[in-house]
Every structure is written in structure tokens, then in C-alpha cells.
Length: 442
Image (cartoon, rainbow, N blue to C red):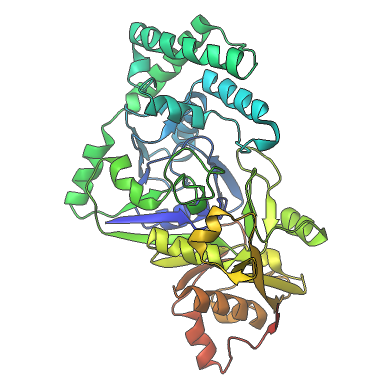
């Protein structure tokens, strides 16, 4: 059975933490899409590591798969393989030789394209993933297996290089600073270092599924960066919805458990609409306390209040089974916390599908909650949290109609509460209503 960890917002929800958290009970972990544009950070007992190529875990004795639809940045992958050698000595890494390589010329093309677009740029992190995916779709791409043979690599790279070099100079008015021969040699050497890890991951995973093994899936980007159902064109270049895993891995559809990860507020990196965004001292505090700076880009993330309209839509798009909510500690001491529960457009209520087509024009409808005191100790169960925090979580669970399974109140793996039953049930049992701490509705 597949067990997937997915992001229910715009990314950076804390997926890496829950891949690592669930890895304690799973021996097989697969990353099947995305590239170095998606970084996942893991914190265990004060030790921190960031991953953008290999499944994010500090657990040892695991089988880690990088499947054929993942996009490879050779230097980053090489660094992560060295890290795993030292940190998780008994783990084994399997990399599909059909993975496409994000080349240095893709990075230069990506940056030239963004510069040319000016104010209309997407806000890409600039690591070349979009350009690599274009070449894969146009049948120009270079796969890992291609790069392990010098003659094959030169022959295939020459056509790609000529096309992209002309595009950089003649279309985007940029300047290519790379040397073809030097890049060929570098790509070849890096690929040869990765070659010992080659494996047809679809066969390996098929065997595991046939033997009724559970496989933990790490998705790279979140729901609303999907290039069909997200905030197009401010998306990535491919599908991010978890059901795309079957073709990305190369297995038929299977039963799947989906853990949807969401933050207690909303953040976004780069351009694109964010209806609940705000820019004031509260936003600065959330950014600082929550360390809201990109794992890959290091850019400050944009801050918005929790948007339950989008999260509820994400649950339908992904088939989420249970929810993990992160960073509730960051919202402490704020006095009031608005939560978006609806949208209007020209004075009329509007559904999520329609709103996503014109998300920059909708007006959020809020309910406002009281904040809670600082969370500064270890919480073994949900009932030990401040009552205001419990009410906030209870309302979210009630609105979404899906159980909150995990509550994270810090970056470390140990700062996680596993919730044994519906939080609303806890409210009923303790004589609380879901509006005990509700302030007002606007």
C-alpha cells in the first residue's frame, strides 16, 4: 500500500518533517517527482538536514527510491548521497537511470526567461527545473543513463545546447557564460559517480507492492502549484497532485493512504495570488518566529491567514485521508487570528474552482479567533494545549470534515502530538462548544 505525504497549500507546509516522522515506521520511501526546486528540512534531536533530491529522512536502515519522474541536479544529488553515506550508513539508495538531468544551461535559461518577463515573471527559484521539464516534453532531454557515456552525452547535448543558447541570446537578450566541453566533462564525471546507484525503481517498487509492503511517498510540491489545478500560470511545470505518482513511478493504481499537511496559516514563495496575504508587524513576527524563508531559495516567504476554502478544495483534489497541521506555536500571542471561510466576487459567493481562475480578484470572508499563550513545553496529548488552541484546531477539523491526526508545535520530530480521536469529540466530552473562543465574523 502507498502512504503519501502531500502539501495542501502552496508548499513549505512541513512535508519533510512528516516524511521523516512516518519513516520511523516505514522501511521503503520513494520520491517520484520534482527536483531541486523543492527542499524538505528535517530536525531530529537538534540535528538538521535539508533534502531536495533524496527522500527526506535521518532514519537509518531504509530503502530510498528516486523514481524516473524526479529531476536530477547532479551536484546536489551527489552531495546528498555523500551525506547519506555518513549519516545513514545502512540505508540503500536506488536511483532510476531514466531520470532527466537539470543542466547548468537550464539554470541560465530559467534566469534569462525570468529577467525578460520583468514584472510578469513567475517568481521561480531559478534552479532550471521548468526548462528541464520543457526539454523532457520536447524529447530533447538528457537522462542519467545518457550521461554515463561520453559520446552519447556529447551527441545529445549538442542539439539541446544549440537550441537553448540561441534562445538565451536571441529571444531573451541574455548571454550564455558556459563552455560546452567543460560542461560535458563535468556532467559525465558526476553521472559516473551516481551510476552505482542505478536501478529500475518501477520493478523494485512493484516487487514490494506484490509482497504487501507499505511504501511511503514523498511529494515534492503542494496542491496549488499543480500546473492544471493550481494557480496557473504561477505553478510548477508539471502535475503535483498525488495521483500522478502511478505514472511517475511506473505502476498501476493502488490503494493509498494520504496524509495532507497544512500550516496553521498560509505562506507562499514567489509571485501569484494570495487572497489572505497581509504585510504588517504580525506578518513580520510570523515570518521570524516560523523561520519563513525558503529552504532552497532562502527568500522571505509571503504570509497570509489560514485559507480553509483552498484547503478544503485540496482535500477533494488529493483524496486526503487524515491531516497534519504544523506551526500552531507560531500563532501564539497574536491576540486575534482571522481564518478565511469563504470568498466573494463582485458581492456574490464564489466556489473554489471559479475562484482559482481569478484568485487575485476574490475577497476573503473571515472568522476571527482568540490567540493562545506561548507553547513552551512538551505536550503529550491534545488536551494539554491551551483551550484557545484546541478551539482553533476543532474549528478547522469541523470545517474541513477530515480528522486531524497530527499537531506539530515545533520543528523537531518530537514536537508532534498524535491525536487519538476527533478533536471535536474532545470538545463534546469536555463540555466545550466550537464557538467558545470565536470573536466575530466579518
